[in-house]
Length: 86
Image 1 (tube, rainbow, N blue to C red):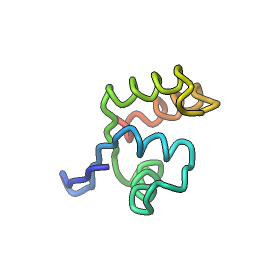
Image 2 (tube, one colour):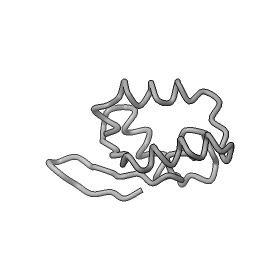
Image 3 (cartoon, helix red, strand yellow):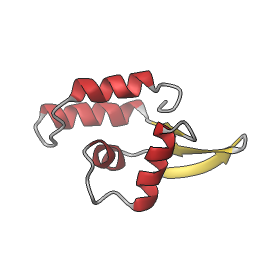
């Protein structure tokens, strides 16, 4: 995760591993990164997800390299929070 500040609020960009670890509740995700995702879920900050990161996640799921059993829920979660996860 890379963070910065803009217009008084924190803004972040996630990478593939951090996003996957957050979505799968992996314990390897750092405390700080988890807090950033939780803040975004609570609408206190924004996390930008580059399209290539979403593509890579979908590719990894298709190739059975990662196990996210409810990908439809994940995509819906991202879609319904489109003002947070951009």
